[in-house]
Image 1: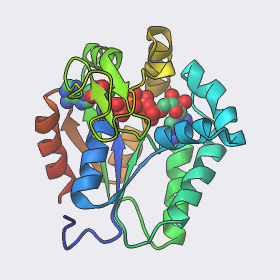
Image 2: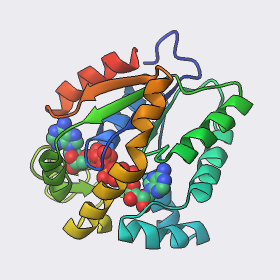
Image 3: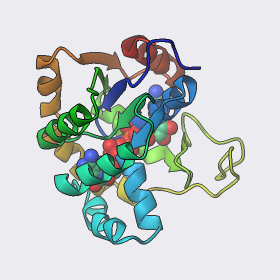
Length: 221
Ligand code: AP5
């Protein structure tokens, strides 16, 4: 259930590919009854629907590169505009560059809102690579792991029974590019948000439940 002071709160989950943003973001959204907004999921849905945006994004995603900032900012602004302003929001995978973070501040300010916490999930690179290699995703966005968090029935989503997929960008070469892109373009957001006094560091190395408990404490709900 949502808490009494969470009206309109905006929380950003920041961290490397594979650190657990999606896993934790889905749980947090469900437990707090906030919107979980994953730009990766929005892009994959656009691709599945065959929209021009999805087809344009595909070439960047397949290469492990970032989709251009203006495309992402428009996508998020449109998504936010369709949502009640009093609903809490958890961003996962957005913002991912300093220009995206500045644009998010502008979009939120226009609606009388602001980012009020940024949770940086951290884990060593060898942990990230192992997690990504075992990841399987349901078309609806639920994430599993064949090593750490398997579905009840092999290869099928517990919620919908749909076949799980191995993401096209989870192959080792693409993962290496995604990690390098994170260090170059996304890591500067740590300093950006720390300077604003919004950053909370969360140890993402433990088990899923342990990380979730630390994250809840960092979110402050
Ligand atoms: P996106 O979908 O956002 O991918 P990502 O940031 O690379 O993050 P991941 O989804 O790989 O990892 P995660 O941190 O969510 O980890 P997860 O919870 O799945 O982006 C994909 C692409 O879209 C980008 O490369 C880019 O092209 C484009 N894009 C998206 N947003 C963009 C933006 N804002 N700007 C520009 N381009 C954008 O966990 C990983 C695995 O580990 C899972 O199997 C999970 O079960 C397991 N696991 C999680 N936590 C634990 C734990 N504590 N213990 C054990 N296993 C765990």
